[in-house]
Length: 138
Image (cartoon, rainbow, N blue to C red; front, side):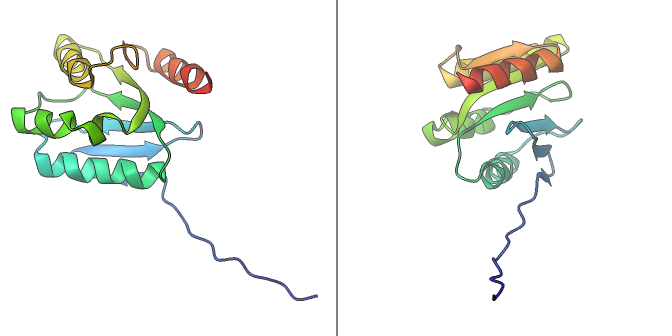
C-alpha cells in the first residue's frame, strides 16, 4: 500500500518585533508583551499587527496585551489602532497593568475600542488568562 505524504506547513508560535514579543499560547490566546523602553511607531504597530495576523491564522482570537513595561503611544499610533479592521480583529482583550502609567495606557485603549465589555483591565496575569479562557468559551 503506497504511503501518501502530506505537505506540512510549520507555523511559528512566536514573533519578536522591535517593540513587542507576540506569542500564540496553547490556549489559543495571542499574548502581546510590549518590550521595555521602546517608543512604538506606526511602522512598529503595522509590524505587530502583521505578526498577530500571522499567528491568528485567520481566526479571531482572544488577546492578552501586557502593558506593564509600555511607554505612552503617540497620536499617530493611536489613530492606526483606531481603524475598524484593527479594532475588530480580536474577540476579547485583557490588558495587563501594574502601574499608574500602564493603567492610563489601558484606559486609552479601552476608549479606542468603544466596547468596554470586550476589554478588561487586570493586574494579575493568572486572572486575565482565566477571564480570556472563560469568555472565549461562551
